[in-house]
Structures are given as C-alpha cells and as structure tokens.
Image (cartoon, rainbow, N blue to C red; front, side, top):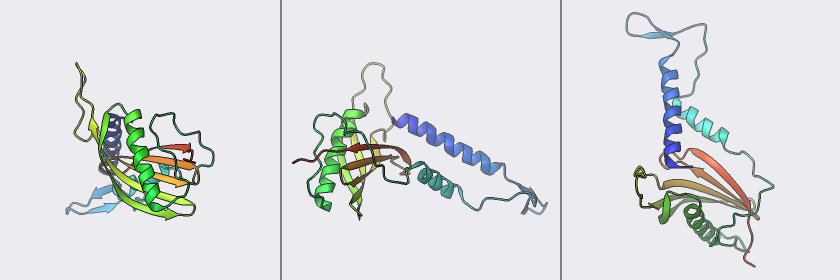
Length: 187
C-alpha cells in the first residue's frame, strides 16, 4: 500500500473519531459542568483504545494453514533448515529488504532495518522490525512523496514453512495488511 493511501485512510478514521467525540450525549448544566444523558450508555474506551482494538480486530487472530508458494522474486532468501533466533532474524531481514524493493514502487533501496523485538513462539519466531528505505528519484511531473513515504514497520511470523508478513504504519504501528506464503528451505 502506498503511503498516501495510508495517510488518507488514517486521517479519515481520526476525523470520524473526532466527530463522534464532539457529538457526545452530555448536556451543559449551566455551571460549566456536564452530566450524561440518562437515556444513553457511554462507551468506556478512549479513542486510543478504540484504534488499538480496531487494528487488532482487523489482524488475523489465528495462524493461517494453507498459503501460496513464496512470491517469484529474484534474490529472496531460502528459509533456514534449522530455526534459531539468529538465523531467523537474518532470514526475515534479508527477505524484507528484497521483497519491499521489488513490490513497492516508492522504494529504490533500503537504508536500514532495525529489529525491535524477537519472540520465540511454539514452532517458530515472531520478529518485529522498523524499515527505513531510500525513495526512488521522481521523474517528470511525478509528485514528490512525504518524508516518511519509505518508512514502515513490519512483523514477520515464521512457523515451520509458513511465513506471514504483517505490514504496519510507521508512526502508529497500526495494522495495514497481511501476506502469507509457504517458503522453501535452502537444503
């Protein structure tokens, strides 16, 4: 997903939350205080809680069982035969560097990939990363992109031969999309 679409969707969602908050059920008692309308029930969550719950609800809650073969992209690494934290981190960093440049027109290269968390789970690992890319040089009348157009977060979940890539927004870490593949091993 391109950064502009993400920013538009985020702005729309935040606008809806703001408008909903302004249309509250409270009435002014004349002394500067408000009292709730007794005929309605007010939610107990804050806008932040709502966004987090929405992002979590959008994300797949179970690990997929049947995924297509990995994408046909030159340079994608093979899954390590034996899974250790170190070789899984190296594998998904290399996978992300090749994958994002091949599939996202805004990225011409990768400046850095920082692993922010690695978690051993039953049968595999979850690896969270922050990615900073190099934007391609605009040509002709192409519109320049925002400064963070080539920045994102990503979580890779590897279980056996199944690899899941969860794309997340750079600033908020909100869930954007998920891809799933059955990956080959190097042996």
